[in-house]
Length: 55
Image 1 (cartoon, rainbow, N blue to C red):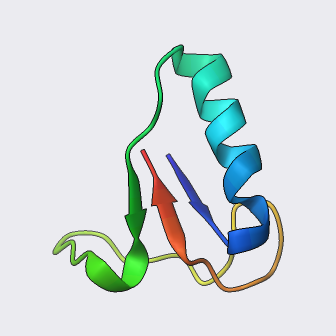
Image 2: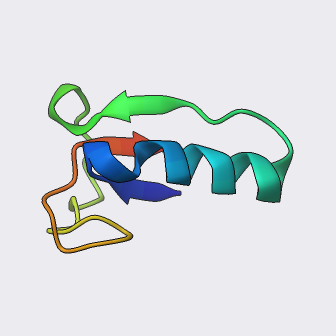
């Protein structure tokens, strides 16, 4: 699972496919509400605010 900014979306997708050998599901964080999970404050790869969830 990756929580990423727009700049790192492609990198997260590439890494996901490399590890799991299947394309990930993509979600915009603004459109998703998860009850038992708090959105991280920064991208997996940098300090920018995350915009996408890659799972």
